[in-house]
Amino acid sequence: MNPPDHSSATAFDIDALVATLADQLEPVLREAHEPCLIGIQRRGDLLARRLGAILAPRLDTELPIGALDITLYRDDFDSLTRTPVVGQTDIPFTIDDRTVILVDDVLYTGRTIRAALDEILEFGRARRVLLVALIDRGWRELPIAPDYVGAVLETGQDDSVQVLLTEIDGEDTITHITAGEQDT
Image (cartoon, rainbow, N blue to C red; front, side, top):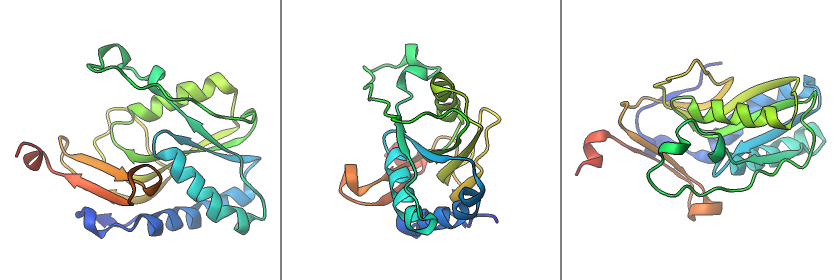
């Protein structure tokens, strides 16, 4: 099933996208070996919690949910111009032999996912890792592709895409700023 293409951020309803992802994941999780959700901070972890809340009654079980801070695993960590904010990884369960559903808000170059996979390997050997992205904006630098996507957003390489969530930002919205608008 291909996700819908959108060219305008105003067309997005985050709750609807999360519900679409839950619909896609439900049959997979019914067959998965000890599934868990791990979200990449700062918004993928919140999306993982939202997915877990939708899926728990459908699957008649609570899925373990963790949060991953990839700051120290970034390949550009030494070149960050500002002092990076290092959060806390919280995975209070073993990932050995589990099906890990890795959740991110925006998939772009693939470097965040590479860092997340590196960190997950520090916690053990998952049976399988599936990638979920709320928004896929293209422009991959690494051969990484999502297994499940809420929506595909066509962007320019220098555009900016931000997902804002109520829990952190006070509202649910997706902002797409084209490179030309950033300069003004």
